[in-house]
Length: 589
View 1 (cartoon, rainbow, N blue to C red):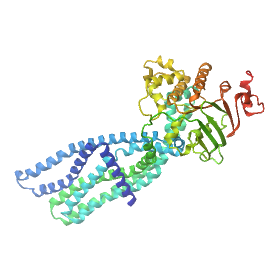
View 2: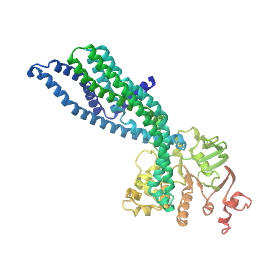
View 3: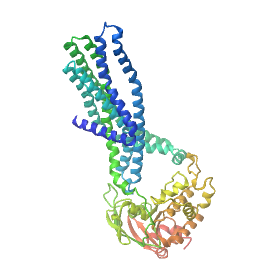
View 4: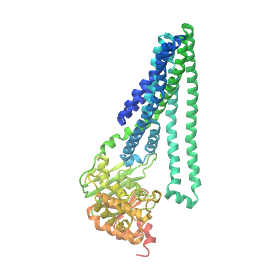
């Protein structure tokens, strides 16, 4: 019970602070009206006692009491409506603030954090928690009003009988005890719900998003995704059903205990007071008090039940607060040039794996060079890329830029050093302008249109964008009423995003996989022409692009097994490179 009270008080305090911070005016209005309404039950008790005590008197003698009762009854509904409206406005503003906080925190996450299931589940739980915690402030005010009403009513009945007053005060306890037990049950249940709903939501999105839904419809595989999603939704519903059932049982027990205590109040007044006026007023007080206690129990239960959800939100918000603070300011000035990037003895192990995914990786990348990395699927190329850019922590070795160990750099500073194009590049259905600006990070100053057109020219996409109805402001994505793009055009837009970023180290994972041969040739010619100002590492499976590379690293089973120029590797008939590309090269050799 002590734990439950602690959670109740803490959750209520957090809600009150958030409400006042987001909406001070509406908060103060709701607070004043809530406290005013809290005095109504006690006022009704005294007025009813006077009214019944004046039975038989002239009407004109009873008029002041009747007018007071009429005014009191007349004010109850409009004041309650105004207080409710103020509370709703507070809750809406708090919800918007919490969503803004969550988006800021998520945007500040490091790549290696995003790769973990724990963080993904925590983000999902925090997102779901907002629905449950955005109205904690109004519930705290409701609890204050209910406790205030019980306090005033206790004082009113105390004037008739001390024991009756104590019974009214004790009537609050069953609800608090019940919801303390409910909170303990829900603390264990909500993480399970979040995990199942996260998977279920992902599967549902595959059926709703245009690109994936079209592919599933073409293959006829939508039924399988739907079945898997429904199973996850049922799992979440079963856990929720168990929590709701437990809460209902606890509420029924608490309601029974409260009814017994209020029954004791009436019996006590009847036995102790010989006054019909006191008994009648006590009955009215009990009826009004039952409603106040019900509201108290509801508000207390809401606060205690919201406590584990608030913890979920604060866990992700608090864990990322430092990262958010570190990345909250714009980055000014040009990105520093890097002359040499050296990879020494790098090893990396994925979470839960016993063996290293890559080990003993040694590479030296110099500015002005085009360096390729090749290997079969699963050889470890993408893992090496993850290690290079800091997407995952190293198990051994180091990555140094001009002698500086990158593991010691702040996350923002390290990210600014790299421009990464992955195989699964983002198809961000925004305006072309916004999609390009995603690549510049928090650079100070607005990006000029000329810079954007130059980046599009680099990616050989300028002509396409110029032909669109609104140019740079054209919205992409047919499901949003925007323009559609081919796979190759999406990939060129991703390349343009990198060109606008202008980082000193470029890492391109299959940068031309969706391009036809002519455009691929143009892109690599541009890369070669612009290579003097940066380090460029290209992961590719196409032999036609390798002849343009200054050096090639061949990866097999998590190790670099060969390195050299194209001419050196292609003539080594016993090497891994020759085995990989013999069929592609046989017509050219």
